[in-house]
Image 1 (tube, rainbow, N blue to C red):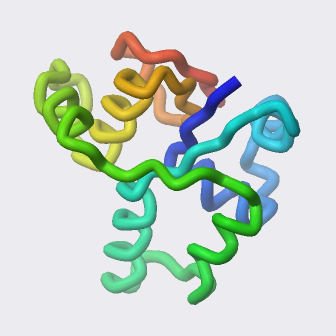
Image 2 (cartoon, helix red, strand yellow; image 1 turned 45 degrees about the horizontal axis):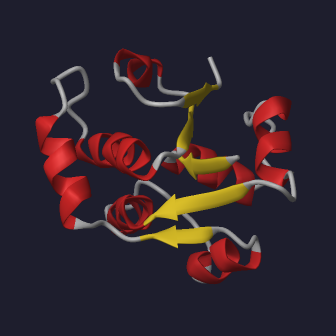
Length: 126
């Protein structure tokens, strides 16, 4: 299975937070899973860190790589797909994650209930 982690799921995984449900943790840890982290998530984290709203280790990229997660850059097709999404969700970071999952055929792992309003494969945590 191929997964794309929502930003909060990535942070829960990296901090070994008990908020991450066992089924999601199992899917991420499964050696047969390919797990992707979007450049949008790293961008969102960087913005929140610089605004003083989030603390993460300085080596967050090294931590992502040490977990053998694959980097997912933002491509033109992702941007076009995000812009074409219905307005169920206003957060641009979430919209790009939804679009990336749709374009790349990935299952999105998220706790955000609004994601279910989109035609995207979803491993929901709610």
